[in-house]
Image (cartoon, helix red, strand yellow):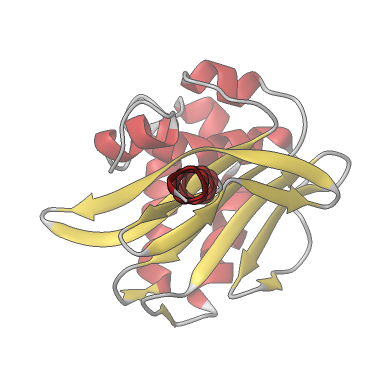
Length: 195
């Protein structure tokens, strides 16, 4: 009887460990260990919280074809990639678009940024059309080889993809660049710490 009980406990522990490894939960938001981006299986590289002052603004999860621990590895990585963001508080979407624009500009030289201005303007328009994002609402920014950058807000793809690979990397620099939106979030996305 004791052997059966121990076997059941061991199985329960193994099941719990598998379940824990199958996803990450950040401030109540679940990030699955893998994501499918147009038939490509990606793995969660890291997830964390974006703070502004002491307030939690959103959670973010970075999905890649394989694990990476530096910005350079992430930006050089071929294949599909995904940044998934879930709001923790209400935010004005046009403000979010402006923050993205500033985040890109802060992490690029002026000449490189100026080449991406049409895409930056379009990205701001995408978010301002949504007026606001509420707690629990999600958007994703995917890089799909052969297609481009696809922005999906509340489960709906937004307009035509951005074709330039430089645009996707400029977006990733908002969180992973030398002047990231949040240094702790950068570390979490690169798998260096838990939030």
